Amino acid sequence: MQPTGAGTACSRRRSTTPSRPAPGALVIGRATCNGRPSDFFPGAIRDVRVFDRALAAARIKTPS
Image 1 (cartoon, rainbow, N blue to C red):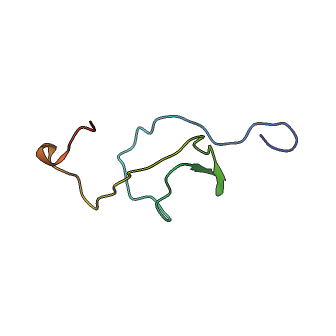
Image 2: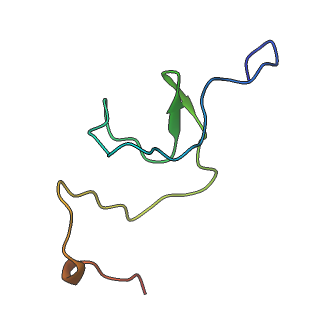
């Protein structure tokens, strides 16, 4: 919310355009709205792995 009580211009809608590289650094646990951090994840995040390519199905394991 804005200090005036008005809502922000950010929305949670699905994009209908093809994905493209995002600007800026990778951030896990929050979103960005109008250049400011927002929507912080309210818990713990651990065992995160990031790859620079899509993985083949055979390389993906289901957590036990």
